[in-house]
Amino acid sequence: MIIPKLKKPKSPNFSSGPTKKPDEWSVNKLNTSFLGRYHRSNDIKSFINDVLNKLKKTLNIPNTYKVLLFPGSCSGAMEAVVWSFLGDKAVTAIIFDYWGVSWYEDLLKLNLKIELRKNLEGDLPDLNDIPMNNDIVFVWTGTSTGMTINNIDFVKSSHDGLVISDVTSAAFVEDLPWEKIDVSVFSWQKALGSESQHGIIVMSPKAMKRLKKRNKLPKILSIYDHDFLINTPSLLSISDFDLCLEIFKKKGGLKFSKEAAIKNRSILEDWVKGNQFVRFFCKKKKYRALTPSFLIFKKDLNHKQMFSFLSKKKIAFDIANYRKAKSGIRIWNGSNIKKNDLIALTNWLDWSFNYFRL
Image (cartoon, rainbow, N blue to C red; front, side, top):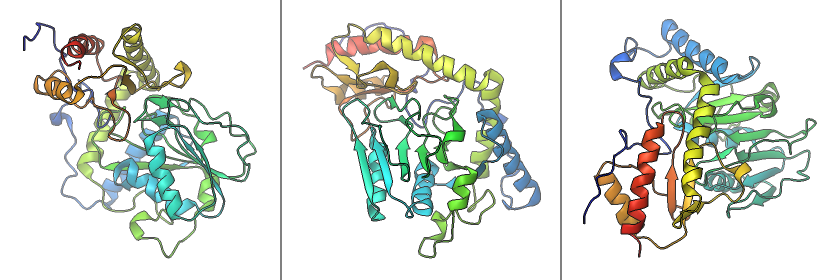
């Protein structure tokens, strides 16, 4: 193998979650003064509450909405939401991503009446005429497909059921319409670049009225009757989140993050035009996620060897497709990814496609 003398990305971290940390981050900047302390001490509860209030302000979450810190990242948070809120009404499940499939499998365990709207072929399912009384469950941005629902204009203002969304790859990228979402869940290790561990549950006043004690539900999955903590949190993870949030705000917050993701995505879009080896999985540009970008192969490649090569040479880590998705390349192109690194990656991919073609 004759390896070309191409410029490598300064950082090979293009994973879609956990994502690359901001360049300004340093372990020496972490607030470690609370480590080894009881998490319900007044000063520590105050610290956690202050961090969650900063989160609400940064993401423009309404003051009337409740924010709950949950163990188990976004997956744990969504499990708790499904089991704590649903059961009173029929559910419309909207699926265009494999995480949507995962939440649908949870719905089946609840023996609910389910109206399924599903498309896993690069387009959105039909969203017209959703029953007014149904609860609605969907992923906002599909991490496995590189697609987004874009907006929820299909939900009428008079909709009676709850609107529940996994927004983990949209939070810190898009200015979400919180007032139209009754329950949302996300985590910190996506667009923000913070560490995993905790999930966030955001609840509207309408949603909180639905909450009730469910005696058959394990305590760890119950959202009923909690302040903002369910169990012992990782104070180190919260300190890391606090630091990443401060960096995010200093850079320009949501406006900066969205603009950077659009610019980075355009680099990939320009590269894909005319590329004989890959295309976007998402068929319509308006449904392409701001990040991540998911490209599927148009020609046969020894892609496993290619990914191994790129990783060993520290050119790109963790860019293979989600395990259940079609074979392809999944690239996080959020605001922590530098333009020149993305361009360098595409140059290496061009060479790799030709070398590893079958």
